[in-house]
Image (cartoon, rainbow, N blue to C red; front, top):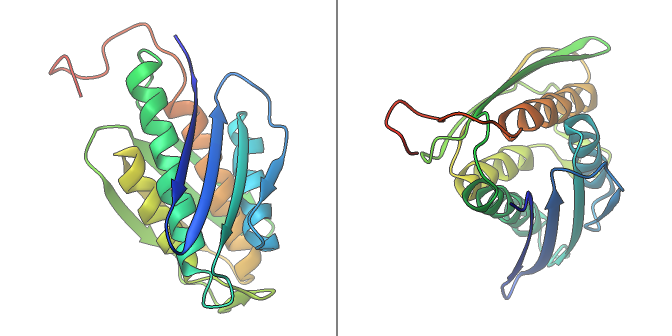
Length: 192
């Protein structure tokens, strides 16, 4: 069974192709035109132990919102495809990750019910030129596309870059655990 997927999304605002291979080490082919966002996605894949390729363009002259949100949706759809076609997974994933003074936690349930709980009081509004409020839009798109319950919390920190990066690293670790192959049923119902 295949544990990889590629999904393309084209709208009037964005064009995105994302590929995920859960059985391949990270190769680092991520380009969105948003260097900070690329850095976060690369950290997520590296710490999750999976290959992620992202080729995304969009109306950045208007606002990076469309591109960031759509990347979350497309990545989520890749994960949903892997789940549906790749056999049983462990379903749950959890990680707590520090980065310097920041501490973040990510918990996933691949349950078929998209839910996002996001708690991160970031003390700065931007990391470089990247507006950090967009992180919630990415995570919401990811939860919706992957049909998973996603709980993300940055418990504390002083540097918003460190806090965001800890969140993405924790998310990667939790994804790696949740989407790991399993031999048993994922639900007492017999299906998700």
